[in-house]
Image 1 (cartoon, rainbow, N blue to C red):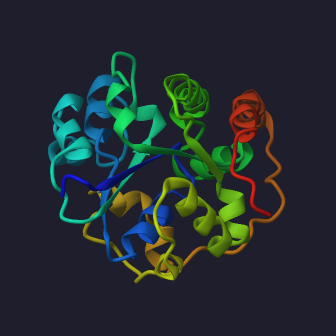
Image 2: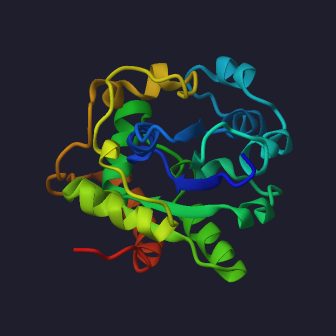
Length: 243
């Protein structure tokens, strides 16, 4: 379909990104793509992520080989949802190709991201969490115009129907109540790394309720979250307001 509406959702790790992929996949008119630059990222950085070799074997090694499927190759549906991690966009990977997409930035408070990531893999490097890169990419895309949409995971969890309705309106697609629920377990579009990272979303059938108070962090983890908050607050100033 040459007139496919292509949505690129840009997030850092330990956010609602997989749940959002579930929501769009549940519509019935949307093809989903899961982190298509992950293999390139692992090869370039050398990071020892879980299932590293399996991830690398599952995708093209060169990021340029991924682009046709994201910008013009038919996907069989009128909508395509692309789940992207901002930290995967390394120096030398230009953003020109995103001009044809509906770009959305999914954000979450750094204290929650840091605590969730540390529980999985220990204290992360700041670049792994993507806050500075997310803000940098937002500014680059906004300068090219139009400015991407920004939505906060806390707002989605507080009122999924209202948040997703506002998001769909901003993107220019019809909202569907089908986005509020999905079948549990792995889904065909999941990357091979879902066996490690998607345990919580695989147990879910919809969005969880509002999150509680921010986690109380200490030591290096607290200092990390504090260092990331300025970038979060900068991009959060542009988020959708619908309450």
